[in-house]
Length: 430
Image (cartoon, rainbow, N blue to C red; front, side, top):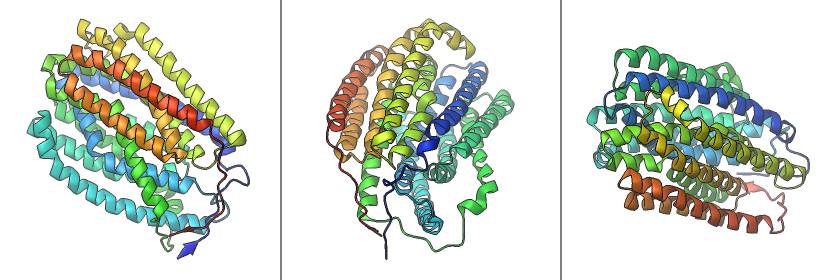
């Protein structure tokens, strides 16, 4: 069955007028959520005083992110696939495609859950996680996979206000769980399960159930273009994970308990730098998936400039306040304080890498997106080979991340200088 879905380049995308508003709303919510996550770290930091427990919470959450990659890839692909077309005035077709994407995501979530169950034990043994922590991580992964269905739909429909609300409620649930439950059961397992409780915030979408689920014949999203984009999304999301969280698994495998506590304490704040401004990338990705030229391009460049400014200012602020930050989570050791500087420098490069990777993904620059994923894998493997102690890892990360950013930036500039190829209104066949 064929449906002539027209690309929305004749007029400004419906998202264009709301770009800055959406970015500011989601960023403001993210700032509050970031403060809430710091509060959560402060709560568990004071409660988990046994050596290695605090570090285990953060490395386990990194492990959870690794097992949740399949749905993140699918979410990104569907977000692009829905947002890239102009569905304005054709609600029936949009709902049909959403229904088709829902079926795909449900099947993928089931498969992803089975894969997570199968991989949990061997990966945990390789990374030296204890059995009880592996079970807690698996529960968190399974809950996250099903909760990710809501995120996929919100992003695809550009429901940034709903995303902001879910994020705020989620962090409130996480704080309550950390304060009440972890306060009574002071182990890493219960702190990890706090993220499972936060997934319940997705139930808010039941208020918009009629807008999400309608009795309509599903339209299959499968096409050659969709498959190609799934491959590219795998490269970009996989590369982003390697750049932002891959070092946590390296630390989990090689570091002692005391070293892990110090490294995780410093990493909590350094890793927050790109995470705090990440909503700007969500808005940028959705918007660039619909328009690439003219006023839209200028707005996108402003948005990426705002992202870079926030990233750099945040890193400077962290360096100035590093002692105070570590005192908040009750892990203000000299080792952790010394680790913040190289980690902050690394995360600035990593954040800029993410921005260019998402730009390439939304622009459908296949070769650059694949290069980004390949460099992410090389970066992660380099850390595994060279980073067998905190000193070696922290020496390697800023240099490797800087080199990777330089390579991607050169290629990105070259691509931006190429003449834009105007999209045609050729039908997309499902």
